[in-house]
Length: 231
Image 1 (cartoon, rainbow, N blue to C red):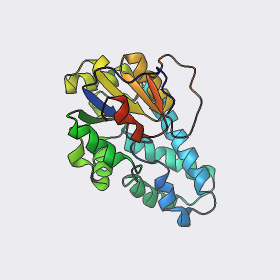
Image 2 (cartoon, one colour):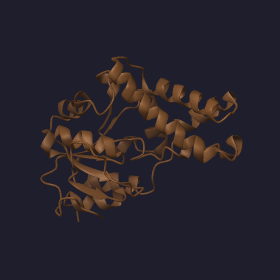
Image 3 (tube, rainbow, N blue to C red):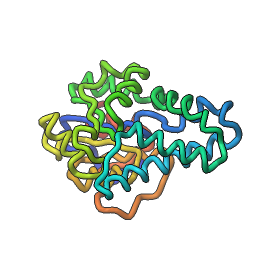
Image 4 (cartoon, rainbow, N blue to C red):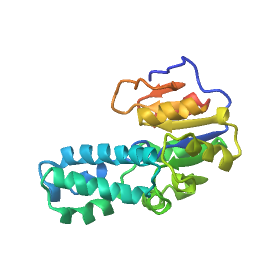
């Protein structure tokens, strides 16, 4: 663990998680369809994810909004075309995206946090139907008190209104919320907003040159309970 502050988190009352890339493996959708996609499956997965995120940022800057499922489908269509792949693959890939595999440590971490009495929530770009499908498929429905979607505010992360949604819904001060994300840009945005942020740096990426520094950096969520003082 690379703890950015050298200490644990301070007086946390709620743990809020990004969903895609943090709780759920976004590469598992293409992985599940690798035989259909063929040898370019890994490249397709990376490009699909890159374009999906870029579309959220660009739409927000344009003052436009589409729900994340539509953004995901649009990003997939262009990515399939880029690699010369059959657009008939889109149906299987989108279905797989609704059933993303959770990272292996997530279930046990959510259980530990719940036993400690901490509120557990998701704060995601995903549409309500999209994230609900992933949560139910993973068996996490009883381990989360809230699943919060940007659709409530009509703009994507890292707009501060998205992070404020967690404060308003949970009734917890921003400085008492631990926010976990594997996305460096999301971690920066949430830290700049005022959350105590744990960057789940699963792929040993460099920090982004953006405002907002995480309180701690970990390699996977199994390191989280110790940070919030759960032995």
